[in-house]
Every structure is written in C-alpha cells, then in structure tokens.
Image 1 (cartoon, rainbow, N blue to C red):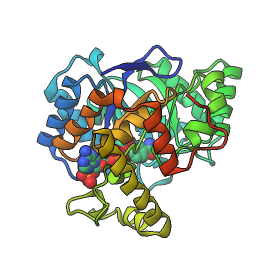
Image 2 (image 1 turned 60 degrees about the vertical axis):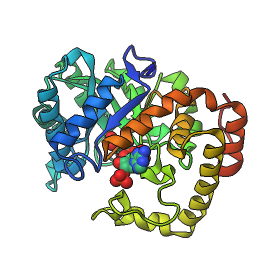
Image 3 (image 1 turned 90 degrees about the vertical axis):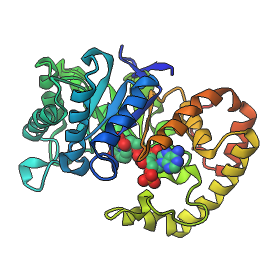
Image 4 (image 1 turned 45 degrees about the vertical axis):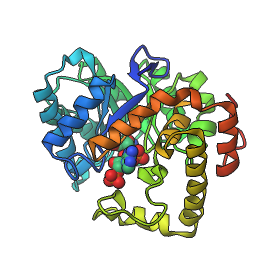
Length: 329
Ligand SMILES: NC(=O)c1ccc[n+]([C@@H]2O[C@H](COP(=O)([O-])OP(=O)(O)OC[C@H]3O[C@@H](n4cnc5c(N)ncnc54)[C@H](OP(=O)(O)O)[C@@H]3O)[C@@H](O)[C@H]2O)c1
C-alpha cells in the first residue's frame, strides 16, 4: 500500500480506502463489518468513509461499534462523516450552521470517536449562504471536533467560492472533494477541477471506482443475484444500466474485460488501477459487500506494472470519453 497526501494537506491517506455506503447496515452485519475493516487495516488501509445519510445513521453506528471492538490506536486511522441528509425535518438537512453542528455531534456519538478526521458537505445547499457553512466548519475545526473539511459532488465554481470566502475571512478553507470517478465518469476530476489542484491544493477521495460493481464485469450476462442492482431502494441503478446508454456502456465493459484478460488480470483490478493512475486522486474509496471482494480489489496493487502506456491507450480507445480539456500524464 502506498500513501498519498490529501491534496496539499499533510495528511497521508492510503491509496485505497474503504467506504460503507449500501453495505454497512444493509448487506453487512457487525461481524462482517469487523472482518472487512480488519482486512483493510491489515493491508494498510488507513481511511474509512461514512456519512450521516448512509442507512439513516445505521452505517455509522455499525462502524463505531466495530472501531470500538477493534481497538486500533486513534492515531493510526482516519474516519469521515458527511452532512446533508440527516432526517425529514427542515433543521435536519442541508448545510445550515445548525445542521452542520448537530450532524457532527451525532456522527461523533455513532462512530464513538472524539473527532472526525474528514467531514464533508455531502452536496451543495442553495438555501444556505456559503459563508455560514464555511464558518460552521471552521468553528468545528477550532473546537477540535473536525480536522479537515471538504465537499462532495460540488462544482468547481462552488468549491472556489467556499475557498475564496474562507481566504477573505481568515477561516479554514476546504481541503478535499469527494467526486464520483471511474472509467465512465471523468469530467470533474480530469477537467473541471484542473485549476483547483494548483489554486487551492484540492485533494480528492474518489467514490464508486467500479461504478457500483458494474466495472467488475459481473453484470455482463445479466444481473447476478445478491448484487447491488437487486437490492430494494436501488431500482434507479438497475434502470440506469438498462437504459440505451447503460447497454452501450455494458458493451464497452465486455471489451474492457477482454483487454483485462489479455493483460492478465480481472477487470475490477484494471478499473481500480486506472483510477489510481491519475495523480490528482488522493485515495480510491472501495466498497465491498463481501470479504472476498475486498481481497480481490486489494490485489490490484500487485499488478501496477501491468498498466503500461500501451494498455492505457487501448483503454482510451474502448471507452472513447476522454474530456477535451484533460491533462495528459
Ligand atoms: N460522496 C458520495 O456521494 C458517495 C456516493 C457513493 C459512494 N461513496 C463512497 O464511496 C464508497 C465506494 O462506493 P461504491 O460502493 O459505489 O464503490 P464501487 O467499487 O463502485 O462498488 C462497490 C460494490 O461493487 C461490488 N463489488 C466490489 N468489488 C467487487 C468484486 N471484486 N467482485 C464483485 N463485486 C464487487 C459490491 O456490490 P454487490 O456485492 O452488492 O454487488 C460492492 O459493494 C462508498 O462506500 C462510500 O463510502 C460516496
């Protein structure tokens, strides 16, 4: 496992990390959560991602119980929460000073920690002035309850605004953004955010590197039972991949799977290594409903040398979606 700086901050995060969306509290119980987290930690993962909105807090409660039982030194790992979707009442959602503060306190209790290493605004909130959110985050940082704050699925414009407001008022600017990034979602990380890496020192904790599992190739011949697309509440995902656009992408995934086989690794590993190849990615957040999946994904790190320029070129030809303004590296 290698470690990368979270943008321009001094925090070194493992290049692969582990998240709990969909899995913890829905597919995975406490025993399985502990097994996943133990494997991750033993293999060098030092960042665990969570959010108040995941299974209405049950995901954080499960991770908190696991963290307590695992008993790792608090200085040996980083854990996150995200604020936005805390409940149905007007005061329980969005990025007001009140909800940002309440959600932090609730996450600390559920996760059973004294501070959050990373705290994300899960989405932008058009109903709250940016200065109010930046100030709320800054206050939590000065109180020692949060170490680094950031955003998720914000536009470059919104991140720049938050950064500029913080600079102007002497407050703590955002350190990182959590965007989706995979072979089919590239624009933000490779193009839109380009000026921010230099200007603000933005780090990225990227999510859904396997596009919810589709980039393992396991949906190539239909929907396997026990997979994410069969879960209640995730009908939208199934619909997305049954659309004409989804069917077109599945054809590309079949070609990518053949290329991966040619190169000598399964597609999931090729897709993960492709994300890691981008130096603006601080960490790739993995998701896994089973320990064997996590082990298989971690094994990608043993094949880094197989992702040669020639293979990357072949991947580009198949996906044919490189953003026009993207940097070459
Ligand atoms: N900020 C945000 O808005 C946001 C949004 C989404 C995710 N995230 C974060 O990013 C993390 C990762 O996202 P993600 O779960 O969507 O990642 P992903 O890697 O795209 O999908 C993970 C899922 O794919 C399947 N899978 C993974 N490895 C596999 C393998 N080797 N073989 C077969 N199936 C495999 C599993 O689902 P099944 O077994 O159920 O099929 C697994 O739960 C989340 O846990 C969360 O922390 C953040």
